[in-house]
Length: 412
Length: 84
Image (cartoon, rainbow over all chains, first blue to last red; front, side, top):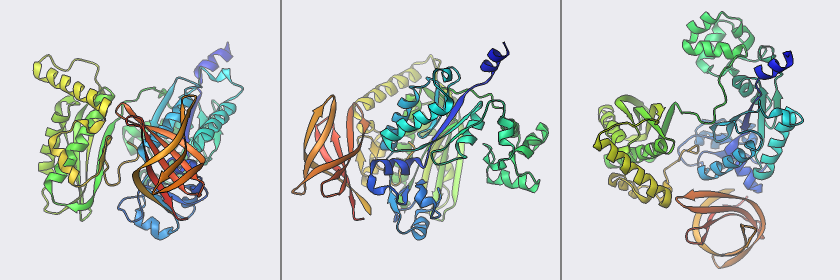
């Protein structure tokens, strides 16, 4: 009886993370890159930052987020690659195929990062380590990418465990021993503890997860607000979050830097409209609506301004979203300095599971969007575009998937 | 070692077997390259059409990424690795 309730109480959650994902994919598909420092994010003479560095490049001091020119100065022999989202997505689909052989409960948090709930399936295999080894072997054989695996009773502990023995490590935390396992680890390994939070904790002489876990819950709340309670629970090995097959993103954003700083408002607005189109398409594809829209402007003197605005009702219509974007941009763009970077974000996202309006105008917009999406799914994203975005043709090359922006995002 | 985006049309000899397509040799810039090693294959989607990407090493030990578009049956050299 005790054993049965124990089985039901404890979950078996895998957190699987690909090691230096983008760089590993490039090395996996090109043997000439193996064993060499590879940097994905852009060419060495381009603007932008390091997105991923291979372990060989990391050993030479290259870090994610470092400007490309600095990476070049530090490691002139490195191979700089722009990367390809399509390629990384295709590899991520192979991961998904492999994971789904073991459990239907798979939650992808990014292209290379997933939680698997094996609570109901683990008994079918010889051991948890056996499953981890089989998944790693299958993925490596098919893509050349190595995986690190953390296994635990909760998502938070599994995530921390997967990061402890990189690359290609497997760390298994026995059920019921999460708190003891976490106690000696550095406090900044907890999800939610960034650089400034770590500094606050160091001022209080809190260095380890165990020391943070021993604080009264109220103190954690005073330190970090509502988030403090969550972090305190993680530190104590508690995390009730289930593995969800579908997650609603908190924010979706699209941004780009211009190849040259520009004061051409047609190009800036065309870019904003293009990015809005892409976000609206993503929302509709996932049956989501958003209530808040944000615009970001980066000037040539590196100063940045951002502003958000909420709409009366949630939407995924590109026309409605762009009306808000234009208003924000007009209010925000007050400086007479050339623009270097721009971006759009949407937040307060919710599923679209109800009829939004009874009135004709909204319904005809929905029909129009549905027709546009249908045409794009057949002939590619660029098959139908708002006329203003065609201004971008002067600046960017395009293919059926869209404009080839300067330093396109590699994660979407 | 540098990578160049090329996207130039090429002629390819390939074979289809068990639902899979595999390039064997191709002509680019007047020269014929024999495919010595197929490193990997992935697919991207553009609307209903599929683009098949092949990462290969030629008999000249050069690295190429070849692209086959299922909509118009055209092959291209997408990328080439120079030097190194």
